Length: 258
Length: 230
Image (cartoon, rainbow over all chains, first blue to last red; front, side, top):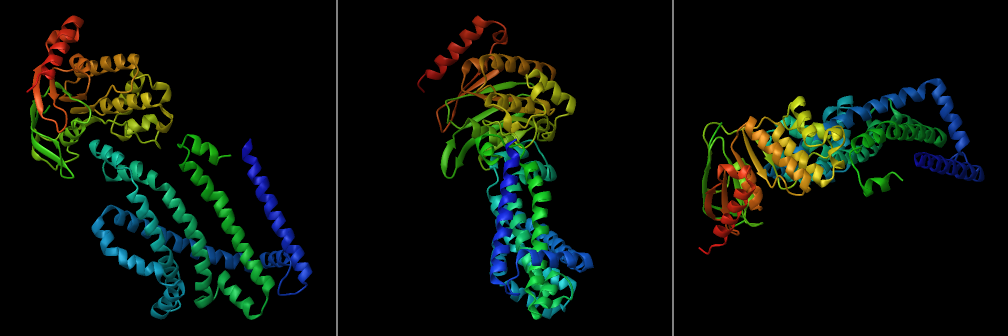
């Protein structure tokens, strides 16, 4: 099957990256630019001591909570704004404001107003992601096929069946785009939130090691987190996406599977 | 079953007149064909009757509650991301009735295939099956036999006649083919080129469905009527 070749190419590209890193690190011979082997060894020690699983676990839980919140509210908002012009007019400026508010400002304000709490942290992250989700879903709703919606009305499909069978399948590409950009955005912001106002999680650890100028451990934590996000992408997101586009046939699809 | 009364004085789309005076009734058990040149506003008329568009000068009224519709659109309008069978059940067909119609339409082996994989002819047959499978109280069919090959057109005509024998429901059948109208309908309404006005309303003799010569005479009589200057 032609399916296996992309995996070989991917594995090779990662290997090449690691080798380049290793070589550059050895050449530099400076503790502030450690080679791959040193970072990986540090990562293994942190895993063995239990510190890395603990902090990564906490950060992942925060990512999951704020991601779920942002996607659920953002999707609902996007649906409403795409569907009803009045809702769109009322909320568009607020959305624009939120979209252009620097993440840092939002985080600091929420910490000031609600204290250095878990709820403030998660809300801050979710509010950073929510507007882009809403905007993406709104685009999707605007692109819905009117003829199919009309068919649904003629056959009296009802709200729920129309959402499930007519609207959501057309929104899948938009929801996946929002999910992808959402995960990468959220885990970056979660680290900032942890750095500023939490006493655990990957962001907190990075702050600790930053104060010690310990680049090896900073890289070890960052790398561990990147690995986990990649596994999420390969193990959950991509299979899910393939499942939702199974029905697509035609030359476009054939090209994508090459 | 309910009776349909249409009394349209005019219908505009974005300011442009697309339908002129069109008034007629469809009795509870009647099949009425709407014949007119393409682009004369037949599909607009069907959307008004279906209640998908309520912006008109005039009235469209059903005696009693608005009936559950079986509708065939000019395009198949299937859900490509659902299977052939799901396209029927989602629209409200029972599983058994759905499968029976798939079988009748020669689509039984496609029941579990994505609707996106059907050819246009198959998609049109599925669209007709959907309209007939939902236990409709009225049928609105926009060129239901278009893009079917000759064999499938004959099959679809047989299936439609069987359907009306078992379930006589008020039916509006849009077509541009007088022969098809005579073969299927009790009455033929002929519309002018757009913006359509109703030119005349002509009954089809009972025998025309079985007697080919009578059908041919009826078609040519209708053709002469339609060609008359007025």
